[in-house]
Length: 368
Image 1 (tube, rainbow, N blue to C red):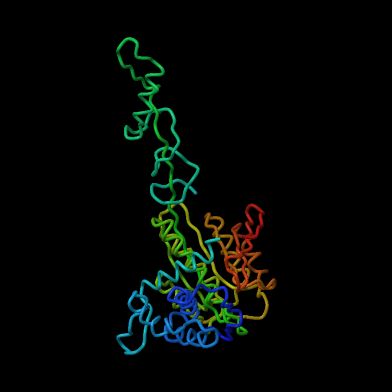
Image 2: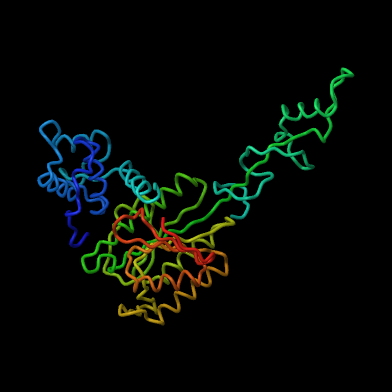
């Protein structure tokens, strides 16, 4: 639910010429805002069409809906005829769109895709050659280069070919590292507080990160959790449908669940991505909750910072994506990230590709 959302910033001159592609880009944005509600997204698209003339006599909204069905982006709901739902193809398309919007502009292990500075008996051949060393496999010997070395070193005057260990060259292998990642997403009520839609950019960041991991690091483990009063695990395919609940922000519950999930992973590298709009306001105590939404409650903050320090001790860095530019709300994130010696990205609600990056471990700050 996007409370108070307005379309006054829409600039039709910046859109491509009329047709499926131009409408489809708007539809993908709207279906993200409506948490996968196709009917509501199409209603908003119709209103935009009335105001800005997105269609014409050659290609109307009916043509667009037919094309969405033909191309496999929407299906008719079997339970309620006449209603549409997005397909897995659209779910992936939304994640890819978020990835392009936001990201378009490690110890050794046996498998993975993260490059490390280590070479040797790794997973993927590099372009570097070196001399043969005891323990190198026969498969790594580059015969063409080795024979050339033998000819240069020993000549062919006697008519005999001589190849020694010193002539052998092997191609370096690059080690790639496997990483376990937990993606934490804040779905507390503050994500739509005062009519400000923070959940839509939060979902976009979450979907972009998930798609980045799936595409670039397919051997990695990725777990996704959401946190409000409590924390629970969801599937990647559920990301477009996320909605804010009547929850406080129990960051402790989210971190505890994230740490539990990472303990079960046997990879050498582990990390947490946390997407939030700021301060924690809730703790679970027995069967009830301790809540305080007014200011930074030290009881809640201290327990959260203790977990940040615990994660640092077991070498689990936490990267926080802060979905608001409010300096007051950033205060907790700054303290939290410094304790963990992690990283933080700060962004306003507009222009998610424009991020302020802060690395507390290296004391470095830059604008992306």
